[in-house]
Image (cartoon, rainbow, N blue to C red):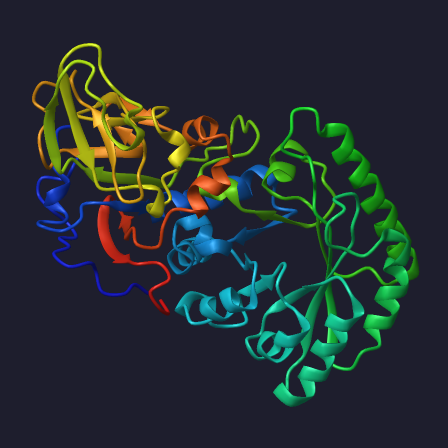
Length: 417
């Protein structure tokens, strides 16, 4: 499932890094920057969300964009072991890669391509046994044509625009579309779906309920005509958590499974699965009023000490966090000092007298009794948790944990899992 570890990788160093620990226990002599992904937490999040929505609805685990930066192969395996029968991806290419993962290789696990099953990829979609979301007849016809060459059926999910005003068939045209698509050779209409535009907003309830009304009216009409597909899904993470009466027998859960629920989720145990760490590689004295870094935008009114950490915006740590964010060193918060550059950033460790080269730096996650939440970084960089996680750079190794121990690592984008 995982490729060879980075050079000098010690999967289970002793002592384990923590407050006062040293990341060079993991990467002796190498670049000490990595994202640690707890597979047990991912599995627990899936089980917790599944229990919260009840046995009458299933959960499709969305693992697009390398499982929001966590590692698609590893996250998919964790979700499947926790009971997932459906996975969601954005593109055919992502679906093909998932089919190479042993846990997702057979038809027992369905993989839904949600936004990239274009006509030119029809043969590959069918050959990989992927379900495909369609929003125009050209897609369905291309999939039908591909079934003869490939020798197996094409399963489609018809997307209706209930109010998102993005992809989807207008509700008034959906019945005719189902009738025409249903006559195509080799095509099985497996599902009907829509997508919510404002389910994660505090004032989005009215708009969301309006979308539900459109969907329920369609379901009633299709049920009466005997053309209602077996699977209906409209709710995303926010829809599943905030609207327990959302229509459909399946929900598509993404960000919630990674421990960053987009709406309050009381009673649902969803924990962050990723910790982003690096280490101090240099500590130096700075004089009072001495400028630090590009543009000289940081200085101290009194003499102090700054430290360099080898992670930057090319690794996905936003440049907008310059002078805005904190990190954890020896269990204490210290500020990012000056500009975040492409490959490194500087932190002010004046308040930590014994801070030294090799000390662990936590940029996302817990250390000691404190915690840097992904939500905090998203707010300070004026974005959302989805972007913080999914833009974490491919050159940052992901180290996968089970039972608190490292079980493997991978450079995302470095080839098939």
